[in-house]
Image (cartoon, rainbow, N blue to C red; front, top):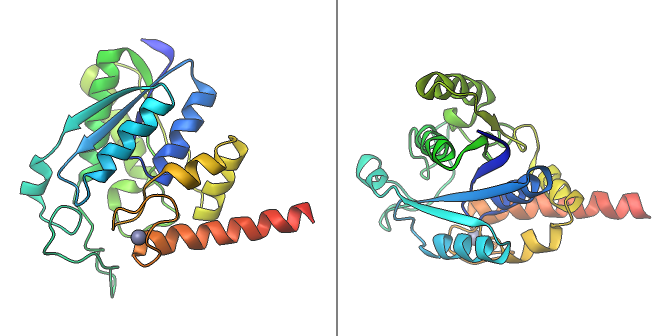
Length: 221
Ligand SMILES: [Zn+2]
């Protein structure tokens, strides 16, 4: 297994694109994997393809359309609105076990392409109720994956303890700030870059961006 090769779980959004740059900085060989599960906006897959192509990265798109059968939700069904979780409920974008599946498939792919490292942009800090984004879960799954394939994969989560402002800072440190800001798609309404400005994903992204830009301005003053 190649110690200098990584597979990045990649959606074309801010977080996973930052992870892609993080991996490119660290490993000689990087491949990306995107899961197609009939996202509300197929634009997401297109953006992921474009970015991977642009960065000259081998890109795998895996069909995970069965997810919409298992968990009809706001990301895959037009008749369910995207909204924040209220009163401790999970947000309507939640697909139970999604990261469990994505990381497992990404690691099976890593085995096939001979990569020791698997990178995912999950994050506990902006915790919106996804239990399979927690650090303890990722570590547990890492052990399970290694046992399942009798191998020594390392699952990396560079964003685990970062807030959104710090994720922008990381992109900046990797000389990818402008790229991430302009080309990625985070918006639930399928608008690239700064997005529609109205949906929960855009608000979260903008708040982090504004916080980071303010901090950066203070440092350079
Ligand atoms: Zn939006």
